[in-house]
Image (tube, rainbow, N blue to C red; front, side, top):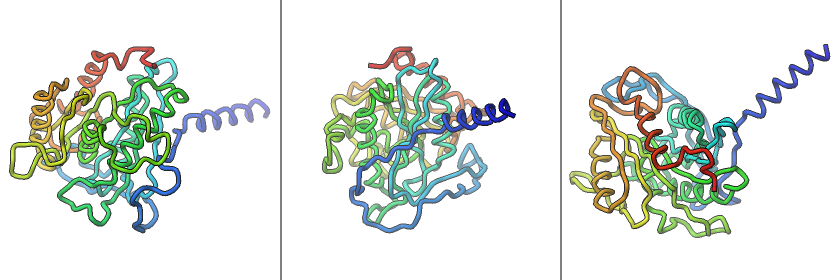
Length: 304
């Protein structure tokens, strides 16, 4: 009986020990958060066909977010490289594709020795954030998140922090990587004195990067000196966020002298996340891991 009780307690402790750490981003009041949109909730994504998305079955989403958080998944200690990546799920700035572009991404990052940190940023759009443009408040959350992770780097064993995003989250990743020179909210404490520049960015089938009816970057996207290396991924047949978004971003990065790599997969559509399939687009994670390895982010002892 004692042995059985011990085993039960150990299993319960192990399950508890594996639970991710959840940290609120903002102390007290969240900037510009005045709307009452109801309690945060899960919902299922719509079932779509292969002309629109690669993963066609519904997956879990989160919406009605008013208190942004970080959900931190650590890799096995023996594999930990000391690199972390902030994960920005997509959803058009209306929802967060939490399962496909959050939890599954953290699992992939853990498999290559990287800490996955899912950013639960504010959705849906608030009044004054029109559908055809990026929402404003999520960038506040992302900038604060990068600074917060840097402030806890010693405690969490992190030496480098990058950012990955999907669809609207890809735009958020680029906006964070290129907008580090101007914070989008009034600093509130010592955390905001710490850099909000990520060490690299991985935007995947991003939207909102191309100007409407013009072959140029969208207004508000600029590439300052000091922009970190960028790895861009897109489907060649994406009708949700056409591949020109990533192509134009790549050209702008190259013109600015920023190290960049672009992968466009013929025949691929939208929303493939990191899931394995028989489609070539599912191999992007291997190319990305090689890119990170070449830059030194997957070397053991990457901690500062």
